Length: 454
Image (spheres, rainbow, N blue to C red):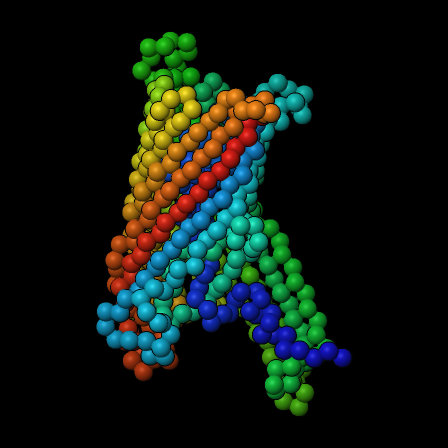
């Protein structure tokens, strides 16, 4: 009979309890950075009006704007330097060394495909399907997950990202009016362990069941081209080039549950000790986005406003056995969130028939409404976001019969300084904070992609 210390391995393997810095987050690449380089470059201001496969996340209706199919592959590297400098007090157990709290990058490989399914139906009405995938550590890590309390503080939205997966379609329902529907797919996993253990932690007679199921959340999009709807063939109509879009992205999260029952002969008899942990990560709130875009032959500008319902996260965390004490606390150490509105503005300019530059600017207010959170000690600040990108589309390429598109983009996010109080019931100073820190940081995002048209 093989004996091993199985329970600690299961917990660490699930990424639920860890002594290392928090590397996962409550964000995802689509909301925190942008999916494809064109989204990163415009600071997501033009994402509602992007006909590439990232439209399955931002606005699936826009898949119908370009009838050509495409295959996209790309890489993204987000480099973080997130700091927490001491203002007063000090770590009561020395858990933080220096001001840099988190600097582990997020590294995604991206893959997307869009195609016209009209030929599969008995009708001539166009129907477009899109698929978008993002995998962490350049494809090696599908489930980046770490949920923990932290004495030194942990950032809310940045870090490694779990599997990013979207599938959806769009079609035209009236002249100039397109609608689309897609699904954001995340994983909810569960592990059950029944074992007999010694006081030293060596288990035997183990039964282990691990399962994961997809959680599917809806995304709806609608786009109106006013020129196409109301101007017809009139070239001088002022509404030519004017578009409006709306999208709704339903909330989603990654969820892990670990349930174990342990008996210790002579000490803990049947039914034994039950250890149950349920925790969430990579939370995306309900997001309502509306935007306007106006363009001519060589340029286009757009503005988008997003309303993000972060206040609902408080209710979600009440069932999180790792973070629930921060939500259920009373006083200044209670974890609170608020709904926010994120304004974005961007534009693109065609230098010639081959090259295009894109830029964007956004301001994201922090959804973290509290300056303290018992033992969880979340940190988050307001963010200024600036993006810049270059697109090159070659209409004629040797061997290939269709155009090829190359995209490069850079984004800088500046986290403005904000003070937080850190709390822990084990600290001698509790219920007062044991330390006050100033959170700030910088995020640099580099991304590139190749798109094959067909």
